[in-house]
Image (cartoon, rainbow, N blue to C red):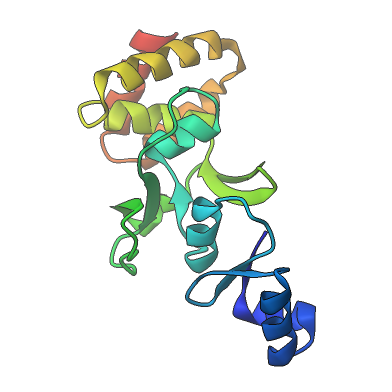
Length: 180
């Protein structure tokens, strides 16, 4: 579990308590103002703790939803246009207008971490929107997974998302051709 300094201080009572927990090995310092209670590598959780308004998208969201098998080399995160640049070499950041940034955003639990992520319907439109930027094999694997999930997708949600996004109808038409 990843904790901010304030959360660690609250849990251990004081700054001295945090220092004692670090010396005993109960806490691990993983970055500026970040501590971990586990030995696991929770880099995505740490980045999302520092930037709570960011939403997992792209290959990261496809992997977390189980649509592709290959873990991404970089974490794809979406944040509002004009927002803070994420200063991490492990993150590929996409700036999205605030009007449709939260469209389809939901929260999932992955390995005990709560992660903001786009739902399956929004990710289908994102795949169509960024199909030329994705590696071809990942694109084909994602489309194949969506074909297997076609009955579970909410068409009305897809239409609502397409109406709210620029050029959303063309992305929706492509999704209907390739998936349904």
